[in-house]
Image 1 (cartoon, rainbow, N blue to C red):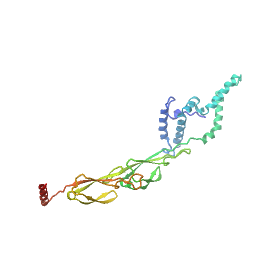
Image 2: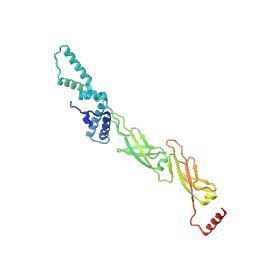
Image 3: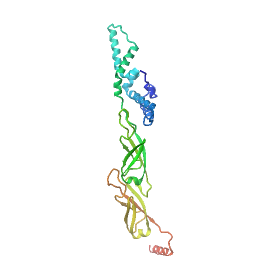
Image 4: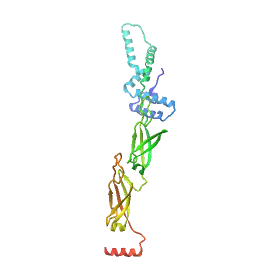
Length: 293
């Protein structure tokens, strides 16, 4: 049986710390993971070696046995019993001697008898997590809808709830890399990039917009049709409305994430529009008005 140098596999020295072992394992497991090296038997073999080395060296008790007994670390207790039996035999005058070859044969026979058992108890490894980014327009996330994503040449149908935020991440269980030796699949993490190309500014569930209001309607009062995110509404403009006046339209904002039929509010700021290109008559009238004030 060939000796397996677990330290060499993890590219470490024997005085490596637990932190060193963890760091080396993560680096190499990522490098040789089958999902990143499809149809590469060499990478798959290396990945298994890295996992095996980590299983031994990351466990303090197993590492101690490995440092002392090398490839036979799993049978350290049997080795100790054999040594104790030899010492006991010597104390009773038994002249039988045990060479290193004898002990080597002892372990080889034991290892062969246990090989099928070990195969049945191979460690299960969880699949790698996948990360994806999905770009949507703000209008896309106003309503709940379905999308088909292609991840590693596989089509995945997902439901995108209304109200998704920009840079929000959702997890889809079991849609990552396939587990090994019967281990669970990894998960899929999707980060959303929401592009706002509308006239509305979004802050959480609320929307904000500015509406131009001509001077005459602001002074005298009127009715005005304004755009909301999903249609138009009629607003009543009070007489003598000032520039910068804000009004709130309750429930006309953005959908609340995973709260059915719940919406934020829409805040409208009036921006007075000063008339231009005045006629001579208009100038005369404004002059008269200024004298009255």
